[in-house]
Length: 77
Image (cartoon, rainbow, N blue to C red; front, top):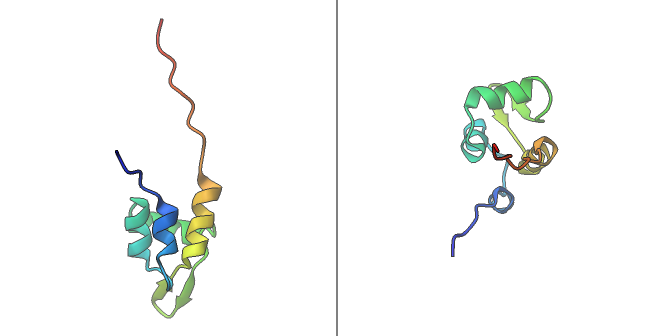
């Protein structure tokens, strides 16, 4: 049987704050996109000097708040 990928299961395995690269890889987006979400305030992050870390729970909340329902495609008659 085909096993489905669950990003929330993977996030629960993180025991420490995530790097921008880890978040980008997990979500399948670019580092620049992650930086953009941090800059516009939609993804909370902690910056210590040049080091940026993101709480895995904040990533999970961000995913939940940005999910959209996909409507089934209609077939042309």
